[in-house]
Image (cartoon, rainbow, N blue to C red; front, side, top):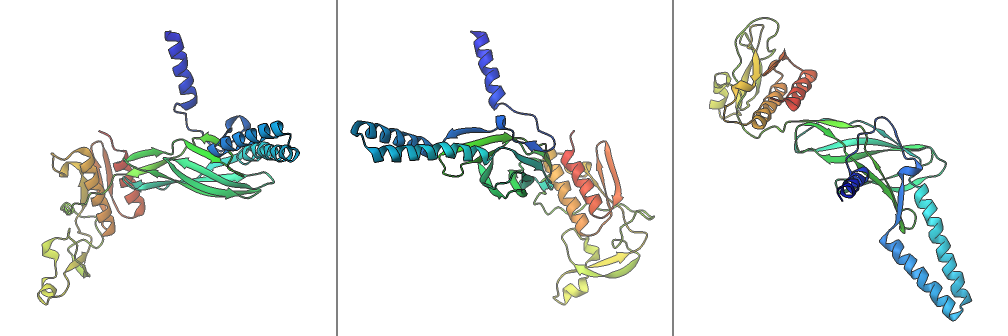
Length: 318
């Protein structure tokens, strides 16, 4: 009895259990494509059977003609439905990083190397369908939406490709699991906590436009700006709040560290707040560094540094 239960569980896992991602281009061979009649197909088959019984009972010549004509159309539909999906090539594309709570888009290229068009192909994932048509000797790019609930690596998972072309009487489908993953950054929090105070220092690794040597101009006030840098004379004239900008080599050095946050915050809340700090510092054009337990990124600025900091925050584990 135990062996029967075990064999049934193994059989279930073989067909419906998790599969390993398939690297490279995926080829839909004949043994990977399944086909079964739809509800409309079952109703069509029952109707043809009733017509055949009626034609036999009443010896209707025209009934035989119509019955066999419809039956032949159903048989030909089996071939066209199966051929519409088999021998397609699916190649993984790109998946741009997103923040937690957003939707990640996985690009797939569906290539048709045959001499006939492939119509009405649907790719199902998380109960959502993305449809495409692929002309002969062409390919089509399809973007699959996947909900990014948590930070870290997000896999594309299993995708179901199906078609009901041309009559909707049959459904041909196949399962694919491309070797793709998307980096999900922590979701920036909505708090208005300003950036931490920079530490004094000298040298080349200083903030360009954030020092206190020479006055460089004014810019719009931001919540994280120090009150001593606000242009109070302009505020007294009932103008918009502005902040003085200074430049020089003796500017302050900004470090974003996990231990600067309250100890009662959980890890995910801390990473969300640090993500907000990284985005705010990058928006202001500051040179900033990142400190995590066991990791330190030297102060820098620009898009590569911002992406490196967000990557470390997304993959950080205690």
